[in-house]
Length: 243
Image (cartoon, rainbow, N blue to C red):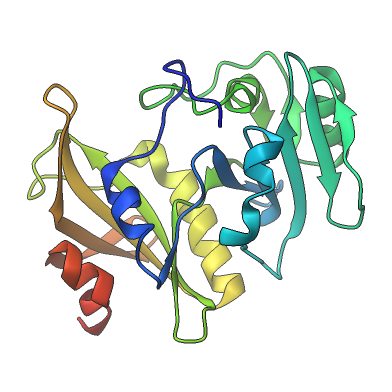
């Protein structure tokens, strides 16, 4: 698996939850992206993989969203992307310009050469860098984490936030409004729950306090209910679901 200091990699909370049977965490070097159309409705689920080695391990992370179109992209060498639509068995090779045309023809992209929202820390992949230079019509978000029910079916999509802000003072930021709305609509379409969780992370000391997890629910256009603060074990058990 390719590792590089150039790109952002994972966090301690995801590493811990990846060992729990009732959660699904994307493999390191893979991402589940959701693109919205001109009506800001989720339209495409794009699975992105850093290379074919990671793609070939996907049996551990199978996410099926029945309400969306689905495509798979594997990052190749230099200006090379391998793309496969759900109705096709084989990958086709795309360069940056061809990839732009693909999204444009899908009604998802307005134009290129766009300076979008800055990365929180680093880009996650070469595809992430390419994507940041395009203006997408209805926005983009990714799925951080899935909780499974007793039948191993997705029951909750979880958006993870972390920063140096103390847990009692943190609140969702307006810059992320579009992503929250896409996830909220996706959960409505799929008939599953949406949660936002936050924990304290000090980048200077590299300390991540994953035993104090704040759980919030979106309850209006820009209203969030603080469900409470839970330990890692309480969160794994789903204690917040009873609040």
